[in-house]
Length: 130
Image 1 (cartoon, rainbow, N blue to C red):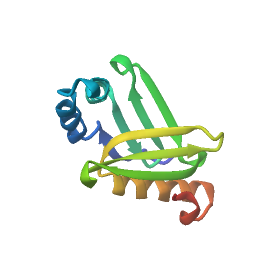
Image 2 (image 1 turned 45 degrees about the vertical axis):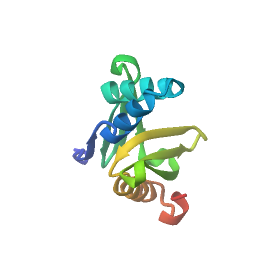
Image 3 (image 1 turned 180 degrees about the vertical axis):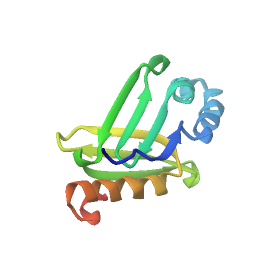
Image 4 (image 1 turned 90 degrees about the horizontal axis):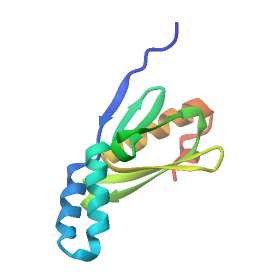
């Protein structure tokens, strides 16, 4: 019997990302950013557990990506929206990158992902964080 999967965070992008991009949409130049924010708000969902990171997104929420912590080599965070939300970039062993956009509680989630990845890979926490 394996370890029970416990959810640390489950939800969508921060509402502030949608609000700011809708306001920017009134300037026609930023309209593509607004469309992207609306699509993210409607169909993008994150689930971060003690075993994996799952992202459901794409058109109508049809795409799903699952990543186990043992595949992670680096984690970086970028604050957005005056620090209320942020983006997290996860680099995998095969050099591919997964971008987790407009995450609420991004500092706390970044720390959690880095700790789990360090524990699973046997690397130090400092070598995982960027």
